[in-house]
Length: 428
Image (cartoon, rainbow, N blue to C red; front, side):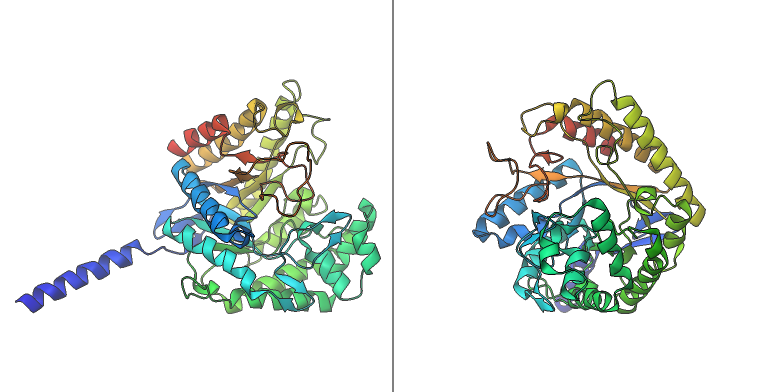
């Protein structure tokens, strides 16, 4: 009898542990599912999350990470978009890139660097949070495609370092999709990442449920119309390659939408209709796209909101047509007066965010295709250095990458009015 009771207790404990384990996020039609329940979320961009545990004072970095994850969880944020790692070192396109690098030199990987991402994923799993991990970058601030082109003789080192014109950057970056050696190198890094075993959990990344999705790159664009065919082929081939190794995780491209596909609606629809791509993404950058001049104001904000709403709805229509979820995974607005100081107001940003969240909430209420929002971006407990505009080695990471003014788009833990807006929609 005693033995039977022990067996029953052991079985009950097994059931409890099994129920507590995190489930993989799946896609069914235009919804994400966790188990059998639809998954709709407000998340954030936390691109530097995998680097915090690697700081010169690792204990301090880990403490910051834990504190920030607890903060996000307390606000209801459970989805984080994170950079896996940067390629190369030194100046690129006239700016300092993210450091330390995952691929320090051509085909040389720093295995120790992934321990930072290992720690992040372990801590996220404890809180049942999910990560969208992007595997490279169309832009220079983490090396990305331009670095692969340099390693394979398509851009010389002097040109790589100097500030390029926009036309030069488009011409060079567009060559990535037709550079076979570059694409092979990209694929080697992808394989290295997928097969990596988490130092804390012992799980390979392909078996890690805290990862929701692999993203091919941050904002991949054809850059030139001549590269569109090669761009489409790269997306299809890369998705097929990842799916052949990893049967557990979703795959998305990482596009900005219409603005990132040479303003070609048919192209946006075609690349996301591919069976290897599980959901659609869009990014929205009113400042970069010239939707306002100099700074957001009370006068120009209504027009910005109107354009944003239209942009979302046009892409939502395509998501409904191809029956896949849509995530608004980047959007940001400077603080009032284009200030960088965290003590300044965010009234206009709050109104702008609230409009996007309201569109998401309406979709959620009717079981629609707009499944998630990841605002750009979480600055956490970091603060800009007084009298210093750009990031320097040794500074705390914030939501603004090294090439951008620190405090430009970061949402800090002290931005109480913004967090109130976020919680309002999550509670609904």
